[in-house]
Length: 250
Length: 250
Image 1 (cartoon, helix red, strand yellow):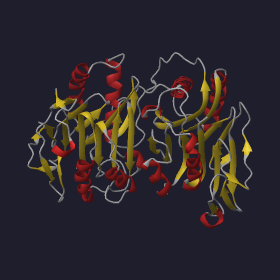
Image 2 (cartoon, chains in turn green, brown):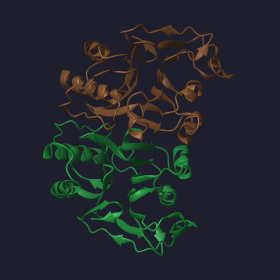
Image 3 (cartoon, one colour):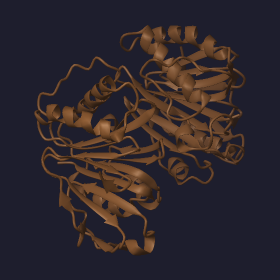
Image 4 (cartoon, chains in turn cyan, orange):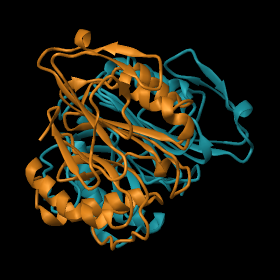
């Protein structure tokens, strides 16, 4: 299993603490990592086929406080597709003048859809194939960028097709919202006023969010496993699609 | 004027020396930088709206020897489009299951083509508009990824349309070739056996390529201005499209 991390916030927020928690798990997931940060419509994507434990790129991400409203990160344990840069998640495509970022945890069996549209995989993973198919179907369903609610409705129609082929824990964002689809293992958490200290589950590192935040700040975090102890992580049910906007589940 | 840097090599090569030379010029070009590295079909893209002189991302690129067969870098002086992440070059799109990377130096006046295809700008630059139009027209001209020679023929048909709107110094790559279109200022250089030492034009830094290379290595470098002294930089003529494959002009 790969590890996913997503963040959606109502004010640009860094994920250094959560990414450190994720990267700690990279010893079992040594086949690359990636992290994408939206800054308004702009996007930074850092990927590396090295383990997040050794990668100079991951080291920079841990130390450089990039503030973002929507983040998707992934550490990879290769199941389909060899270890190569083109197979690192998250994947990015442009649709309707917006970047779309996608990461997947799970395994799809026999998923070879007809890709007749403008989205083709560059690498050889089942995940990128699924992303291209989702983009193709979204492009068919809407002529220009629809509302978050309309997109969520369309995604709820499309996701059962993927679910029929295997486990499909997924994070998707276009910079306006974060969509999280549960299959086997995905948890989420909301942080808001009053903020409390949190301790990473895998590492002896704590942060007092009260000292770093404003009372109006709201942040939602999604992860394959709870990253911290002493916070109220909630499971996302198999087949459930959660939508986060401005740090809140909508 | 922005500054462009391109590299095409027959064996994966790092551009730390050339990028250092480029970044030195960032004091006049403080509105962001970007660099894209192909590793086979995979792509790393690093962009930052900060100056390459101060950016932690640029600092990592200067110190991490990423080896690549095709590199495109850009440092930006904003003329059209405000200073923002989504306006940083190079821009990336996927077409025919390949990533395409584009950077532009110059100014296009009144270029507002009909973009009815699958490529839309995310930011507000004339450059990204031109790239989206080029991708749209390439997609119309070929059903799947054509040969480098066929692509070059199509580009030679399309580029005069852009040239009619202003200056269009351009670098484009799909990981198989590097295309360099000259307008006002663009130079190229081939390095091959016997390799010689070179000194950066703007900084007291030298490198002895003979110590770092194999006799079979071949590298082509393209830049807005000659980066080194004592090497045979040749201008690319206005309207000329040069194509580099495996470190050689073809």
